[in-house]
Length: 108
Image (cartoon, rainbow, N blue to C red; front, side):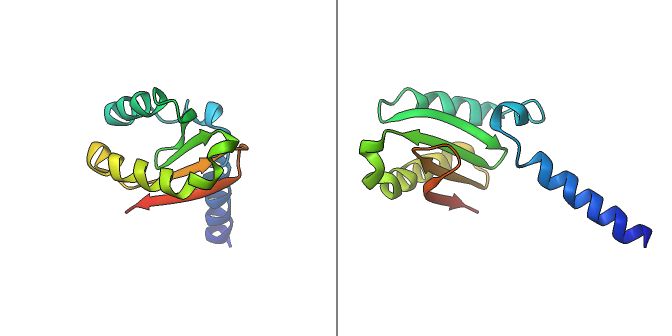
């Protein structure tokens, strides 16, 4: 019984940490040098409004609503560029409204 309770509490803690907002979560993990560098490069492009890591493996990129139709293309482009630069598994999410992913592309 103690084992089941312990596992349940551990799972609840894990999910609560990884579902917090990016600002609160950023205090729990530092970005790697490559993540920080890549984020600055992507953020400078005019196509993207914001670029934030919501977890060590989840990059969320906001685009203007006029770019909705290009969401999948943009996700794949960022994934291709980041594959060599980051050398880690991750997913890039393209969104217009916070929390509502329009497109996702992952590297495993």
